[in-house]
Structures are given as C-alpha cells and as structure tokens.
Length: 407
Image 1 (tube, rainbow, N blue to C red):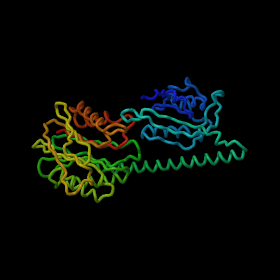
Image 2: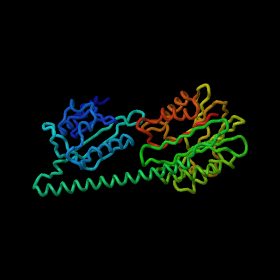
Image 3: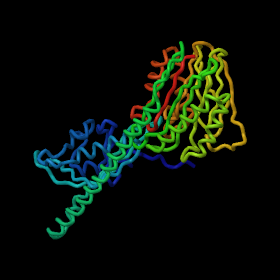
Image 4: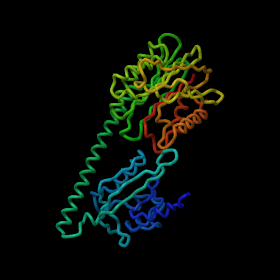
C-alpha cells in the first residue's frame, strides 16, 4: 500500500528553524515562515533579490565581517558540493521599522548544497539559527558581558584557525600545480600527426590529485605510446607519486613489447611506492605504419576512438585491476584494433566523466556524444570543446587529464 502524498512545500514552510533557498549566484528563491519571522523581512522584500543587497554589512561598523564570511562559505559550498557549518557570526541587521538603525545580532549558520540530476550543485540551502539571546545571556549585566565576550572570542578564534588552514591548503595547492605543470609538458611534434593535451585542476584546493598523461615516441620503428593515469589521493603526496609513476611508465614503454608488458612492469614498481598500489593507468601503442592501436588498461576508464563516419568506440577489451592489485604471475590483457587515417584517439581521467550520484555509463555516454559532435575539429579545438561540454558549471570536483591525438 502506498503511503500518503507528502507536500514538501508545506513541510519546508513548517520547519521551526529559519531556512532560505538560494541560487548558486546567491539570489533568493524562497524562504520559510521561520525565516521571515527571524529576519523581520517578507517575501516581497526578499524573493528574487541578491542576498547581500537585502542584508549588507553594518556600514557603521568598520570591523563587520559577516557578509565576507557568509559569502565565502556559500561560494565554497557551491564549488565543492560539501556542506559548511560556520562559526558563530555577529551580523547586524537593519531594523525594518527604523531605517538606518542597525540591531546587533548573532547567528549560527549552516549552508548545504542541493544537487541537480547530473551531480552539479543546483541550489543552496541557507539555514540560520539566531543566538542573540543566548549571547546576551539573560541575567545580570556583568554575566551578559562575560558570556558575550567569551562566545564571540571563541568563534573568532575558530574562524581565524579555519582561515589559516585554508591559506595553508591554498599554498599546498599552488605548489602541487607547479609540480604537475613541470611534469606534464606540452607534447613533442608527432610528424604530420597532431595532438593536444589538457590538464584541469579541481576547483577545491584540497583536490589537487595525481592525474597525469604522457606521449612517447619509441626510438625503433614508427610507433608512439600515449598514456594516462590517476593516483588515488590528494595534494603534494599524490602529485609526487604521479611523477614517479609517469617516469617509470615512460621508461618501461621504451623497452617493453607492448602496453600490457609496460603496465606489468609499472605494476611491480607501484608495489614499492607508498600510495601507488591502487593507482590506475591506460596505455595505447600507436603503430602508424600498420594503422593499429594496441592497448591495455590497469583499472582505468577505456580510451575512446572516433571514426570519420561519426561513430565512437570505447577500447574496453583489455581491462584489468589497478596497478598494484593484481597477482604478479598473471599476464595483463592486451587488445588490438585497426584505425583509418583521420580517426581520433581520446584518453582521459575520471574527473572528466564522473559525477556525484550518477552512474559512470551516463558520463561515458556524454563523452561519446561530445566526441561525435566535434570529431572533425583539429585536436586543440576538440580538446577545448570536450572540456566545455563536460565540465559542469560549478567546476570540476576532481582533477582531469585529457589527451587527443589525430591518427
């Protein structure tokens, strides 16, 4: 038997805590009855307006920081898709009955993302609980002053600690990006063949990851190796492991007979490197003379092959566990496919296609559709088109490496 139909709008307005619904541009879409009662505003004064046009900082308080702190929190939630519980905030509000008169108010805010079907952040829930009365602590004047000072001091200390942590993470992010840029140079010329590479970091400072790519011309014969990989984890450690694995695969590719053997060698090396065992990689050997692609994957998403007739095929017939996970005695699989002149090979990491709350097949279908639309473009324009089509409006939540080669 089905349950009763729930009127979620009625539930929203009946919530006892003040809640507002905002766009990611911080424009009011709705608020519940408790919000109107708490803020002293009504729907006509608020809905459709920018948050800080309705509630600016107190112009008479040079130390006011509520608007800056709240803006940073909401934009962080929109960018990361993670809720943010703010420290106690002093945020004065202009009296609705006496324009120009500002009332000292204290708030405990929590900001939460609402996701769209594609996993991007569509809306922001801004919940506030007024704690002005608590701060003022009903009772004697001395007690009120002591409690107010104590609570406010602790909240500011927490806020300052959080800010120092964010600055530290930002510095780590910058160092990791410079490290990745140094280890991920532009590809060398491939004769008359053209290639494009892209690396896009996540929008979150902590999400600098170990994504990498490489293009290697083999010294003997008319052959080029194209590879991508992804190290699990974030920050400088992941970027350092990425550099080790990229260099090791580059060296192995120069002497190994095919991509499967190169990944076997890389897998053995990965077992000796902390945090590298679960890393993934895919390698494709391009035989220009024989017009064949020989490929193998160690737990990585399959490369895509676009043909001039508009079809896109995923090279998924030689997929195996991540680098350091599979038994050493078992040979990695390898597969081969023919290509015609004018085909396009695309290798990428999971940040390009994976989205929260979405099956990976949906992301792969979105990638295939984009490649099919833009396959006739030169590699540089195709790479840019793929990023434009596939990066969500709020930005990437994981780093992305991309290689496009015109065969």
